Every structure is written in C-alpha cells, then in structure tokens.
Amino acid sequence: MTRPKVGIIGNSYLINDEYPAHAGGTMNSEAVAEVAGCMPLLIPSDPRFLSVEELLESFDGFLLTGGRPNVHPNEYGEAETDAHGAFDRARDAIALPLVRACVERGQPFLGICRGFQEVNVAMGGTLYPEIRDLPGRMNHRMPPDGTLEEKFAMRHIVELTEGGVFHRLFGAAEVMTNSLHGQGIKAPGSRIVIDGTAPDGTPEAIYVKDAPGFTLAVQWHPEWDAANDPVSRPLFTAFGDAVRDWADGTGARSHRKSA
Image 1: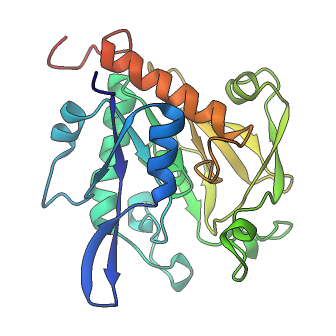
Image 2 (image 1 turned 90 degrees about the horizontal axis):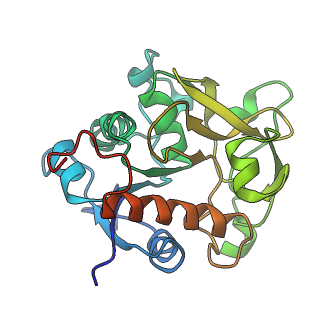
C-alpha cells in the first residue's frame, strides 16, 4: 500500500561553489518517513519547473523546511539590508503561495524555522532580520562550532499557551527545544496565532486561526532526533495523521478537483 506523499520544500545550493543543486536535509526525510509514516519526496522549489497547482494535486501534505536563505523582505513590504542575509527568491515564489493555498483548501503543512517564517509572511506578517540585535533578546542562532549533536542540543524552553493547540499536543505547558535561527516574527500575519514563546518573548510556535486543516509551524528544528525526542515525535505524528486524513478523504478537501 502506497504511503501518503509529503512534499519537502527544498533549497537551492551551489556544490563546490559552482554546481547548482536542490537539496534537503536527510533528517527531514527521516522524520517524515519514520515518525509521520509518509513517503518523503523532495521538491525543487522553483517556478521554472513546477507550479503550486501541480504540487497541490500531486502531494497530500507539505514540509516547509529550514534553510540558510531567508524570505526576501520585499515579500513583507520592507527594503533589503545586509542584516537580511542571503535569499532564495525561487523558493519564495513557490512556498508563499503554497501556504496560502493550503490554508484555503485545508491541505496539511508543517513549518520549520524558515518554514515557520514563511507561514507568517504568507499570511501578511513581517520579520526581524536579526533577533539577537534586539534589546532584551537572546542569541537564537546555531552555535558556530561543535558537533551536530552540540549544535542541535536543547537551548531554551518554549512556554505554551495554557489549553492551546501546542499545549494539548505536547501535554505540557512548556517544552525544551533547540535553537538555530537568526530571524523571527516582528508582526504576526492575519489569523496567525502565536501559541508558544521563548523566555525572551520571541515567537516559537504558531498556527493559522480557523484554518480547516493542519497549519502548525515551529521556529525550532523538530526534525532532529524526531523519533526519540518527546516534543518532536508527537508533532510529526500529528502531522502524519493529518496527511493520512487528507489522502483518504476524511480531511478538508472542498477545493480539490476530485471533490
């Protein structure tokens, strides 16, 4: 029996500074396959090769991954500065309209790090280019040195809204997470509910209010050790359940051609 298909939004890279490639972290595929129980397929996120409409009809759900390039500030009405870092405008052109279409259709997605920021921008929100430069904020960036285990180690708690979506999912009012991001939410977009924050007030967990489907997104990286981590596992399990519901017809499907 074929597993439901999850499209993993890829990033553009240059291998050896000269060979263009689309890539996605292996741990994303592991989390989708081993915890969510779905078939992971990497999407070359570039409108030259595919359309949002084709993606919606080809996949049952989407994983909006992290990545070094940031959402271009033009997408939320601000000018580009050196602090905004590198960009991937092709991914912007696919991911942002894809989020909006999934929200409308009820098609599930899970946002991670840059994907978290994409969900906010897609719904009309804005971003700070560098969280650590703000008064009273901690440095949320990945440690520059050390092993992968050290870089993805637990860094801070996330305080969840009492009785909220994430509180119910994790069964706890606060959880420990890793932290590997530089940017963060400045103003939440329309219908964006901030459901969890770091101790310094940085938004860490969101969803789209009144959306018919699964729209959870987190600023940390739950794909790391997802099979064993007590926070990552229920998040990917719930995502996989939502994808299966969509695939078998019990999820929101009013805008699908087959409806």
